[in-house]
Image (tube, rainbow, N blue to C red; front, side, top):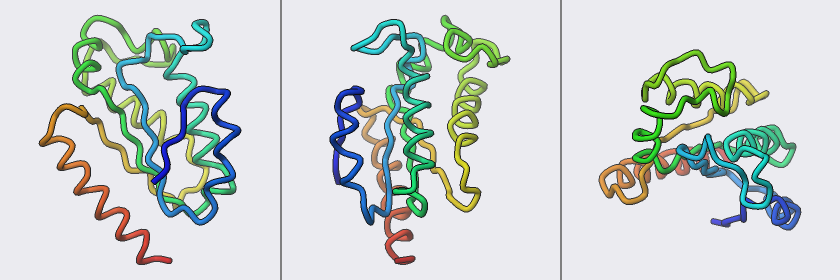
Length: 152
């Protein structure tokens, strides 16, 4: 397991570390769709995450790599989506202030960038402080990882 920093200046340091990786866990702050980047407040965090996910998902380094996508901070996302529309980040969002519609939209938006139709993208909405949720998600991830190792 390798954690890589999300800031732009950190990215060039880690891409070469991924030869023979079987799975990538990519984390997105689900509630950060109306926030700017730490290093550039004019750039949206969710948009930046989608751009980076697109690059990683379609990189030659990860052609046969399982992608596990965490939308973290789901508890904050549930609260915020009732007040702040996803349109602030995605003008093409046509749903309302509805958690399920927004969740489905984000899932589809991130899955749609995958150019390899044989690659599965596993999506989980998580709350790190919710022990039951994390246990369920980690159990699911364990199965995904074991399955990907069997195919080596």
